[in-house]
Image 1 (tube, rainbow, N blue to C red):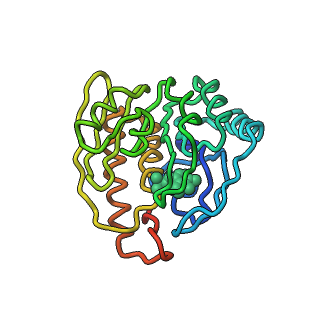
Image 2 (image 1 turned 45 degrees about the vertical axis):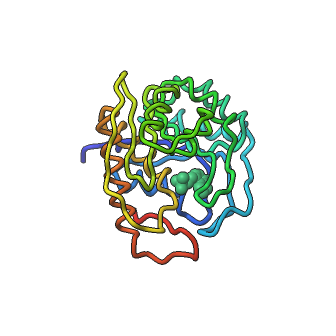
Image 3 (image 1 turned 120 degrees about the vertical axis):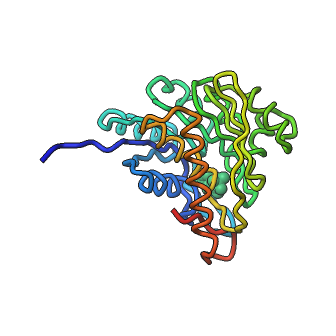
Length: 250
Ligand code: PLP
């Protein structure tokens, strides 16, 4: 029988015990889109659909050991970075950036429930790396220090932030703004009326990483990821899981 290697994607992110966001959403997205998922945990969160009750950052040497173990053995083709629990981990990842191919950085700062998950200082070192950066409007505002609510403000923020490409996601507007190769464009999607949106940012950045691993260019990867998130939101619209905002259906 012929030997084959599936595309390998790595998530460097926090665990969500409720299963809706973080590492759990990332691995579900990788599997659904045909990639083999590997993971480096940066933090353990205790949470459910109602909110976050504890955060335990993983020590930087344990993060480094996980990263070394994965990269030493598995042919990682794309990497997604989510929640960074400790600013020292941001520095570590920045120093490893040239070993992290097709890097997608989701600057996770605040959970959907409003809980603070990380500080802007944690992700700042990574903004200088050649990554695809995927802030939502709130995260973009925190990173540029200005309000980001309208589409023109999203475009201005996308141009200002570093990275190889920046996608500012519009969440309930369902309009994203992509800045790539000197061109800024809007990508309109179909709004999905649902309370079950926990993990949509994680899912979006993970889907971009899979598509880049499969050989898409950035604009195609972003469009495919947006379609996947829309389908996963629509698929989970009628789910009742927990008393708060539930997860997507991968
Ligand atoms: N990563 C972790 C570990 C989280 O707990 C959360 C939200 O609670 C996120 C990322 C971001 O979630 P979302 O995709 O809903 O923005």
